[in-house]
Amino acid sequence: MIQKTAVVTGGAGFLGSHLCDRLISEGMKVVCIDNLLTGNLNNISHLFGNENFTFLKHDITNFIFVPGNVDYILHFASPASPIDYLKLPIQTLKVGSLGTHKVLGLAKEKNARILLASTSEVYGDPEIHPQEETYWGNVNPIGPRGVYDEAKRFAEAITMAYHRYHGVETRIVRIFNTYGPRMRLDDGRALPAFVGQALRGQDITVFGDGSQTRSFCYVSDLVEGIYRLLLSDEVEPVNIGNPDEITIKQFAEEVLRIMNSKSKIIYQPLPQDDPKVRQPNIEKAKRILGWQPKIDREEGLKITIEYFKNLVLP
Image 1 (cartoon, rainbow, N blue to C red):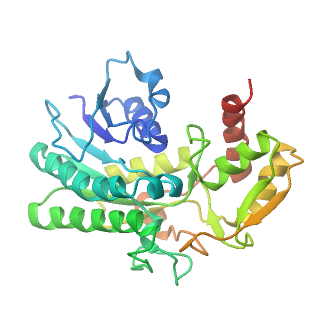
Image 2 (image 1 turned 60 degrees about the vertical axis):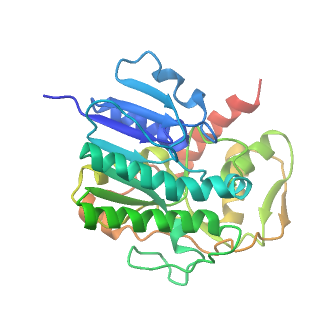
Image 3 (image 1 turned 120 degrees about the vertical axis):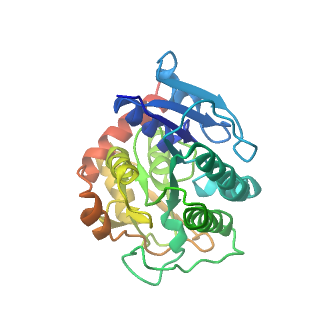
């Protein structure tokens, strides 16, 4: 059997690195491309020396050259947390537009199937709850978060255009909040922020009154859903996430309980356009992929908190 080759853009990031692991475990060769703007070589250092792994430091908004055959491309390159894309607005827009264009060009040249990492942020501050794939969203295109939301919406649009016009095999995953080892402590997301503050003995910061909701999916569950989608025949977007919804205040309290922390919760103003609710409808993933999450939040949190402890504590 001929060994398949997968290209993972953003492969040194949190999700990209876990995907590199999974694809190699499935017997594929993996070419990881990352400019290390928000990625980290520590996430993939265990793969160096593996004959099935190649790392290319490259900015995919420029022409991409990959020698030989390519069967799959998983496009995960992008700043993905608010603290990153608010600090890197132009780069976020460029990787979502120019970068996606270059990656689609590579897929067309190599006759490869491409899977686009999209996001629940395409739904904006949703007026439909839970969010299903047929919902077009409620996004402020000129707000500070618009640089990420609209980059991903454009990426979806050009991906579908390449599918319809050029016949490129495309897949689109809309990823909801995900957590697990290899998250950055300073990435501004709720879980690393809460754990980092608690480990340092600081108060935990909740924005708004904490009544906004999120749904947290453990990384191994997400990777399983993405892998099944990659191998499926579904062209249109599929939500992958955990529908177990929780308020941010409850989530902070849960983290403190698991950590046995004495930190207190303090409140700060809600950032502009911060979504009030976020919960995936995963009926399509269940039906088409036979997928649903298996790791409950407490189990996943314990593993992730241990990972963060090793980063922070000597």
